[in-house]
Image (tube, rainbow, N blue to C red; front, top):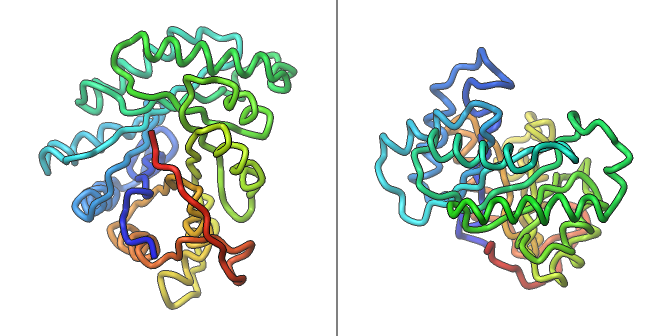
Length: 273
């Protein structure tokens, strides 16, 4: 059984008022992060473009130093855009807003909406060049410990695996978008870690009629039960949701069935670099 919380990453995209939900009440989200950190969660994923890092800093200043805390920070840029300027800005803004001297891992993502020449999205050489150049800029800053690649599909994932400087790949990973599952073995053969994003599909997969946390969060248990998944990023906006997620993590099996209802098999898991 998995009892540790080292695989749980606190997602911050909509946990408080920010770019996506400007009118949201922030109090419950702040309490959620406080609960998560006090319970042992040690990974936080944030995006400077979403304007929620302010709340992360508020919680950290309130509770004091958290031993072993790691920050994963998103940096978005369109293909053939000003990659260097955008990455430097993401680093500068995030270290300032979070109040940290270094970023544990910069997560590079192609900005699909702002990529003008969409044909480039299907060119592995261009995608690999994006991740390679981005990693070079990130490490040159002297404030980034690792570089991960956020992948929107198999082509981006295959390109990221060609880049030695990229130590982990991240992708949407849930029952309604399971495409990455077929590629995890390839990720592991390349010696990289895999991070599953939004295993509850931003709450859409939560079963509101279930009477237990495990039943409500069955898709999370499905994702957790694959030991090849190094971490799962879940946005949690209330302490109650945090406690349910933590309960599910602690009680999930070490192996992943093909569906939530079939018998599991065991496989080794790679820790995050």
